[in-house]
Length: 261
Image (tube, rainbow, N blue to C red):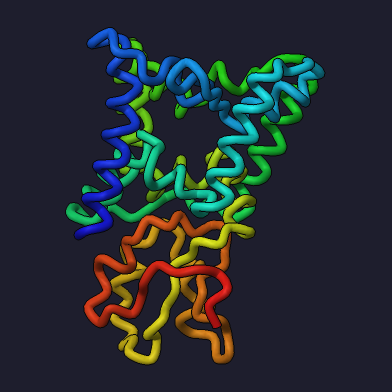
């Protein structure tokens, strides 16, 4: 489970860097996932928050623009939805709920289409335009949960349990299926050079282990089952989590680049 362990280390390190300031007075990074300052020099801005600012009709500060471009450039290189699997704290909740669903055999009630998250992203932008404000950030569970953890707010517990039971009882990885932040990063993922590749797909015996653990199993269909299709998982929906690499008994998958033939 190498990639699972590395993902948990990554998520823990990100939260740890934010918590160093409030807990130990060491401000390597200040702020939250919505907007922060690294080493008091490098601005980092959530691109979805910046997008809402533009639709709200405000003139963003130069630091916000620079911070957004830095974040976009980084995730454009490493895989877009890498944020979802390697950084976002809600991923731990989603993984825990999915694991418990499998253990006790709960079947999902809600199923969302692949386009749902894009519709919600459009609605977020429409709300910002209509109310001239980043209205979504007032109710965004990812924002509330991450800020609550960093700044010790009790609301984080409520949001965390709500997301957990939503995923557990209503739909497997239900929030992740509709998250507008994931929608934005998936757009970057379509262009990202870092990809998972079914490099030894001729060894696949259709055990479906990868399908069972993948948060976006539809991305595996082309590389594994379509004749003549590229072995590269080119879909921006892929989170580059490495789950398929971890569980495949025949080492079909590996990390590589989108230009692999």
